Length: 451
Image (cartoon, rainbow, N blue to C red):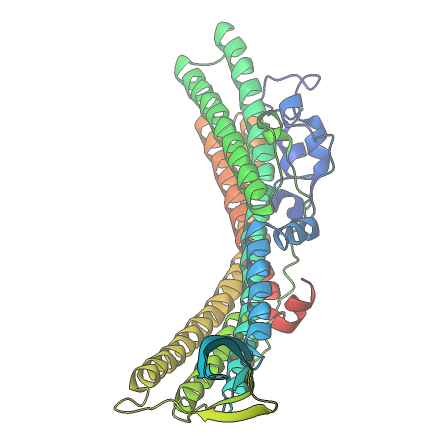
C-alpha cells in the first residue's frame, strides 16, 4: 500500500512519497507505474484471473469481426458475378407440332384425314463486338475492387481496435495511478485528523487535506468508470462477449511501442498508390471503362442464328431450315446506355481523385501526428517529468523539516500528478500514431493474403 508521509507520520504505517515516485525508473512513472504496484492495490483493482489480451490478439480478432465477415461475403458475391458474366447467351430449343384435316375424294366419296406436322429447332444469339469479354473484364475489376475494399475494412477495423486497446491500457494505468494517489491522500487525511485533535494542525489545513482526499477518491471513481467504458468499446470492436460483472476485470497487456524515432521513409506517392482504398477506386475506374466499351459495342448488331428440321405428315422427306434474324435498330443507337456509361466513368474518375486526395491528407496527418507525439513524449520523459519529480521530492523534504506549509506540498503533488497523467496521454497518442503508421504501411496484397 502506498501512503504519503508528513512530519508526524510513523514509518511503521506509512511510506514516503519519495519511495513511491522516485525509486522507480522514468518509464515506469510515465506509463502509470510498474506492474509490481498492481499487487499492492485493493482487490477491486487486482489482476484478473484470465490472461490479459495482447495487441496481436486484439488485431487478429478485429480482422475477423462482423464487419469484416460481411465484406468477405460481398467479395464472394462479386466473384460469382464473374461466372455469370463470362458465358455466351444460352441457345433456345423450340419444338412445334401442327395438326390439321386433309379433305379429298376417294372412289367418288368424300374423305377426311388428320395430319400432324412436326418441327424441331435451335436458335442462338451471336454476340459481336467483344461484349462477353468486356462484361467479364468489368466484373473482374469489380471483384478486385471488392477484394481491395475488404483489405481496407480490415485496416479500418484494426485501427479502431488498436485505439480501443491503447485506450483501455491507458485507462488501466490511470486507475492504478489515481487509486494509489487516493489511498495516499486518505492516509494523509487520517493523520491530519489525529494532528488536529492533538492541536498540532489548524482546522484550515485539515480541511484542505480532507478536500484533497475527497477529490482523489472522486478521480479514482471516474477513472474506474473510464476503464469500464474502454473495456466495453474493445469488446465491441473485437466481437468478444463480456459479462457486466467482469467489466472491471478485463485487462490488456502493457505493450507500449518504443519511442525509437520511427520515420516515414516511404515516398508519399508510392504509399498512396499502395493503399487498399486507392486500389479499389482504380479497379472501379477500370470497370467503368469496360462498361463504357460494352455500351459502345451495343451498336454492333447481334444476329440470331437458327436451325430447324420440319417433318410433314404426307411427305417422305424432311425439310431443313437455316435462318438468321437481325434486330432493326431504327431511330435508336443506344444513346441512353452510352450516356449513362460515360457518366459512371466520370464518377469513377472523380472518386479516384477524391480517394487519392484523402490518402495524401492522411499521409501528412500520420506524419505530423507521429512526429509531434514522439517529440512531446521525449519532452515529458527527459524534461517535464524529471523536473516535476524533483520539485515534489524537494517539497516533501522541506515539509518534513517544517520549512514549507502544507499548501506548498499539496501543490507540488498536484503538479506531479498532472504531469504523470499528461505523460500517459502523450504516450497513448504516440502509441496510436505509431501503430496506425505500421498498419497503413502494409500493402493491400499482404492484407488480402491474411484473409
